[in-house]
Length: 328
Ligand SMILES: Nc1ncnc2c1ncn2[C@@H]1O[C@H](COP(=O)(O)OP(=O)(O)O)[C@@H](O)[C@H]1O
Ligand SMILES: [Mg+2]
Image (cartoon, rainbow, N blue to C red):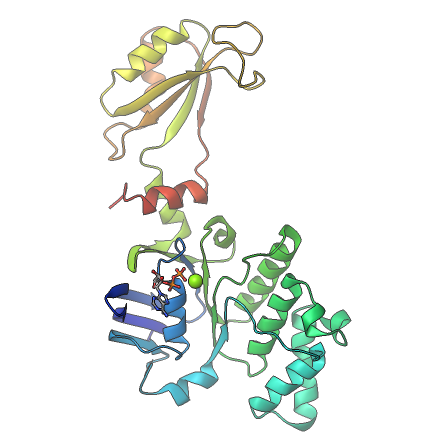
């Protein structure tokens, strides 16, 4: 049984369809990256899973329990980190955690222990006596995570926990998430930036306008996006001629000639200041041509190859390609 499952989950706000038959399956121990642009439906999905919103149609289940029908049994299993934490005037960090631990029905020595444990885990010990409102956004986000760990939930629902964080705070959040994953938590974490999640998530789902465009491993997302890949080719001479030959090959979408690195944007084409020019060959999506065919083709025409490198497909590119509908 999956730990989190949605079946044709649909949410309408009046006439507006925010979620359109969303089907997700997330297994125990998965760290699922939920990626999509603003307005895609991430927060809506997470709030439904957190039992805070009712679906218009379809079902959402946590550990086999149905949202909207078995909320009381679901709530102890989940920890929800909203995109923004509210303001807590005049509360210091330990009081804040103590307050929520009490809400969860944790008392006495075990409460003191659990507050200490979550402070250690989230690296907030040195801020234990600081006012919540005076914490940086990064620390407040870690405190939000600390709060939802008090009752040791199996499932963590995190809505853009790294948004608005500076680079250091992002890294700290990432380390914390890795630790939670190691602890065996099932995690769903949303973001509008894919690279942020690549390192921690074993599965990703890409959502746009309430529909799931992709659901699978990070590696598979990159592999799919590789169709339409660009490769950089350098030859010892007759670059322009090589470029024209490549442009005529079926399966090649675009060929451009660039001055090689070292020449600034203003470097004149054909100027002798930089290295030899480099040809950028972009293949059509669909895979009629394989990049590994390129060297042979040129060698057979008498060219000598000095550069042959695949343009790195990063997750950002993969994401952009997948969401532009270039891949079905
Ligand atoms: N309470 C609401 N009333 C009306 N429309 C809403 C409400 N909440 C969200 N929406 C709309 O639903 C869509 C999905 O929003 P949301 O789930 O917040 O997306 P995301 O978190 O991916 O940015 C958006 O078009 C948003 O404007
Ligand atoms: Mg959102």
